[in-house]
Structure formats: C-alpha cells, structure tokens
Amino acid sequence: MEQIVRINHVGLRVRDLDVTRAFYDKLGFEFIVGPVGPEPVAVMEHPCGVNINFILNASPDAAQSNLLMDVPEKHTGYTHIALEITDVDAVKRQLTERDIEITETVNLPDGTVFFFVRDPDGNVIELHKPA
Image (cartoon, rainbow, N blue to C red; front, side, top):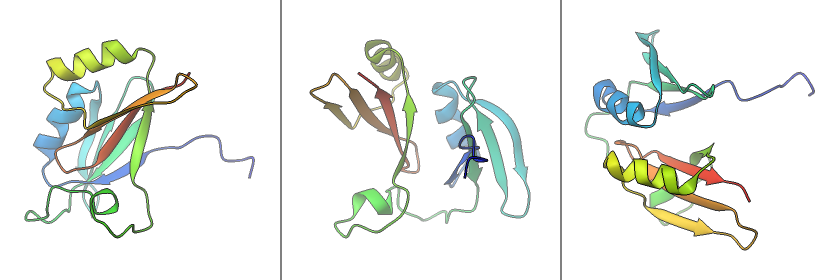
C-alpha cells in the first residue's frame, strides 16, 4: 500500500505517568497531552517526530519485565522500538549522566552499533547507529 507513509506512533502500556514522563524527558521527549480518552492515554513526542502513546492502564502489581523479551518461551508480538542515533559516544555519555543503564551493546561487522535500555516498566528501547 503506497498510501502508508510512516509510523504514526508507538503505544506502550505503563503503570505510572509521572515515572514514565520523567524517564522519557531524559531521552528528550516532550509532553503533549494526557491522560485523555477511555484507556486513558498520554502522549509524548521527540523533536525528531517520534511519537509515543503511553497507555495508562497497566496493573500496579505487574512485574517490571517485558513478557516478550524476558521469559524463556518466545511469544509473538512487538518486542522493542528502535530509535536511530547519529553519535554513539555522545548518546552513551548522556545516558550515563542521566542514570539510564545500557543493558546490552551489539557491534556488527559492517560498523552498525546498537544498544538497549529499558524504561521503568521494562519496555525495551534500542538506540541504533547505522554503519
């Protein structure tokens, strides 16, 4: 379908808007609106145009893990979002300064580098620098 032009947003289920908002603020996202709607949802957007909808109906006692990434049985579904970056060293330095732990780094033979962080609810974010 040539009418599809881009991803409009990513939806992530979270427990606490204040905690989530503080984390994504550290990544440069700006709060747009919320909570709104029947779920309810809050929206943050990065200046580059990446938009995330936070669905605010996670169980308060839900484990801080990502079912699709953290259990031995590999369920189908979306496992993470990947945000493209321009400078690996600068991003790693900023993450360290902002107390965000990098959980894994991968260096491919072609020069591609990507690494992963997790938000407070265990949602996985890949920071990806193409070769």
